[in-house]
Length: 328
Length: 109
Image (cartoon, rainbow over the protein chains, first blue to last red):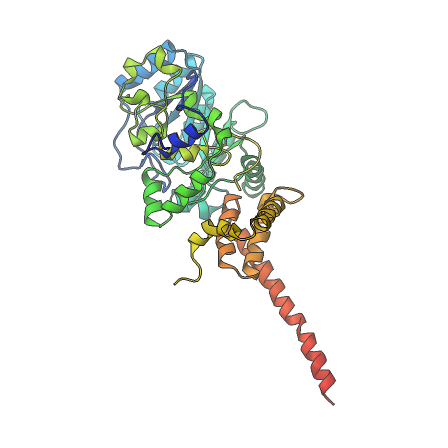
């Protein structure tokens, strides 16, 4: 019997005896600073791009800073769009670091070539921020196919600047982690093996270094879903995600330890739910109304897209959830 | 009627309706063969892709192309694997030329 006729994911976890997906204590606040981006990637779940205007304002930034302090978050995870294009990005990062938080930024490399952003490597390093940067592949063809023509060459230049600022080097604590997204309707390979391959190829071909590689599964929402539909891959991809459901990925899902804030201050369980406008706690709530009760034991809003985070080795903003074995 | 339908891959189980124990035995062996061992899953997927082209089987080509992508192979690597299959097929054809030569030599003055 399907207790949730419109939610195959809830039915699947009900088969395992779970009455729903519930959060642990939220230790990470993930802040999406807006949809403005210098790139318009084909797989982007935010539908971000140069023509978007949604951007977090100063009032909401102040609410984020207040919440970071009041609710004792340990980590600030800044994402977008390209969050560096928000005029208050540096203010938020600086305030959080001064509070003693671990601050990570989801960086797209080529934003460094936007006027006013040339000194980002030095800014990141001055605060000791963790940089999580997108690089779909170590070859031009796959990278440019996903992120746009010329992105690969610029990404290599930007990565070199980060290396020169101390990122990815053995003798510094400046973490440069890369993100791999498959360039199409297929899954990422085993994270550890691909990390070794990326390290070898980037070093041998371009003398570039990084710390870790995170493999992410493409989410069947927004722009990537549109591409799946247009290319005739939707049914097959969704079926593959469902067939690859792995219960072992459930405990490590990032939504269980993260609270997500949209550019307009609304709260969500994850960035994907934000794009689908599935609010945390079942009804729209803004950051200024956040309570301690919402941070632990919160019922997480789910949908068919959740199969994207539970397929194979699992997928989270920190890469594969299960570190041994592979999807293939 | 289409002779090859990609949906057939999902119907593979139907082969087990008659003599299910044979199908079960095959699947256990098949799964064990493709597990990571002395060869990685990616290497096995590339071998599978090469064999699929050598056979040549549209089902296997479809399936192993996806397996290769999931395992992190790129088109350059997959193309090399296909060339290996093609080269061995080509070589096998050519070496059989000796059979023809032998017949010619036997029949000729």
